[in-house]
Image 1 (tube, rainbow, N blue to C red):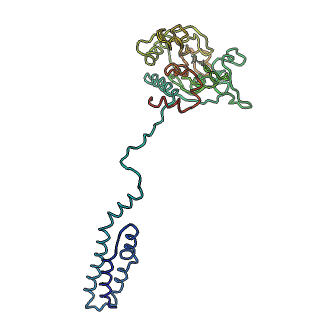
Image 2 (tube, protein in one colour; image 1 turned 90 degrees about the horizontal axis):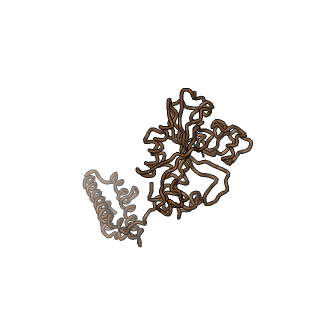
Amino acid sequence: MDIFDKIDQLAGEIDAFVIDGAETMEQFRIKYLGSKSEIKDIFGEIKQVPNDQKKDFGLKVNALKTQAEEKFDAVKESISAQSAKVSYAGVDLTAPTESISLGGRHPISIVMNRITDIFSRIGFVVAEEREVEDDWHNFTAMNTPENHPARDMQDTFYIKDSTINLLRTHTSSVQSRVMTSTKPPIRIIAPGRVYRNETISARSHCQFHQVEGLYIDKKVSFADMKQTLLYFAREMYGAQTDIRLRPSFFPFTEPSAEMDVWLGTETESARRLTKGTGWLEVLGCGMVDPNVLQNCGIDPYEYSGYAFGIGIERSAMQMYNINDIRLIFENDVRFLKQFSSLI
Ligand code: DAH
């Protein structure tokens, strides 16, 4: 067959080719437009065409190629759209999505962050330390030597055969860690988890959280402490909040006190939380005992300071009306979800 007849024949075939879907579209592409297409083959035959016909040949093959491309392009868009529709059959792309529920902060984190934030605003810097501690940082440095009766105040989880031998019973261990590694002035706030070997009930647990504060500088006084704690109470519980400091005892402070905030006796929950007195116990505090400064290598004749420790669970339970401390550690999503809109 003459090569020109072959071109005419192919033009007829292309014209007659029915493209009615993704499959026939692909067949058409391979047959006429791909790298091994019949049109490519014809291009290759130019060598056999006599010179005076080469120009004519070139024009005709190019026209053939354009014919195939135009036919392909004409159907391509509608068929691709059609096949996309097929694969999403039954799916309504305009329907609203299912709502994605965002996680939320744990109530303990909310309260802990809030307290940390209040102190950060007046220059306290966050300090975080280890939960597995040694005896010295948790007790001895904090003026509680071995056999001191005050060790009985806190039932300790010990780890056998190790020099790092206990789970810290309070965040006060961060005080000795910081004082032995930093020169005064020191102004830190230390949130964290602590452990005590206590029977688990609705009111107490073997793990809980505290926020520790420590301020050491020249000429720091009890009045400085009182004013700072009043600022804290008013930021935390409202601008009208009243506080009182009751004398107390802690081995690491002298004098020591406990701070209560006035919740009143008007509401049922205030009466329950304060056992009818109207006063909620919020924290322990005091002037850092000179022995503690000395133990940690700070000269007590040059420096003084105050410290405080705030229990988190009780505040969180009071704020969110949680009546059983165990809920805090169970991680039941039905409980946690109730806090998901809070930050
Ligand atoms: N560490 C004490 C406790 O766990 C709380 C405490 C009291 C911390 C007085 C202090 C403080 O820094 O000065 O019961």
